[in-house]
Length: 327
Image (cartoon, rainbow, N blue to C red; front, side, top):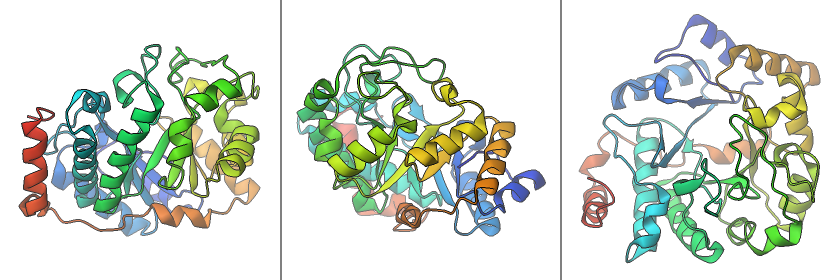
């Protein structure tokens, strides 16, 4: 999965998207002007590659790429302090998914299942809660709303980024806790929601008492624990392999190979076209084939820009406004 620079496709973009090893494209804020422009961009992409997965980070709070003409969603931490928090989280999950699907995207990389330990600035209010039981309940409700709209859910960042203080976008975070400590807290949302999650995204965090590799490059984490111990059978996406936390594996070719070897079904290489091309060359050399599981991530209920006329939409917006979660 890669990205593009602007709000429309260039000839170079089209050529890259035609490569069968490119299975997905993620949109960032720079690709988005308004609702109709995003819809036309998605259509243009699908004219080149009808089968491609189109994604976005539309978590809510500060991580929200679709803004103009879209609902400004609350940070997930806002639900915990509200009465009827689970119903509000479910409503927000449905609203988010409905808008994202309506413009032709397949899914948002959501929800965050990290716990808020009051340590990680990069997680912070993106987390539902610091208590694993409460976080599980609220995330489960959000996922229920996503599924109701027809969107697949991606839990991130396995096995939990909330304790490590460094930001994996710019550093290599380390979590010194042992596996039993993680099982008793951070792994609980992943374990209890494993049957509801369609995909999981591992953290670029090293847990040295479990493995010397970041979770996204670790067969111990992805195969032994996520697949075998937790019984997860869905898609595994790497986090962005251009992030500093992934650089321990070498150049982009080495990173994509390490992610796939560890058990990822798709590697993300974003905000660095040279790195994306290097990763693509590596996949072509390896003869990598797309995982059949990726088809599960497709838009399950293609939406319409008339969604704001839906009585459920109007009722949902009124509910969130009454709770002062949106304006």
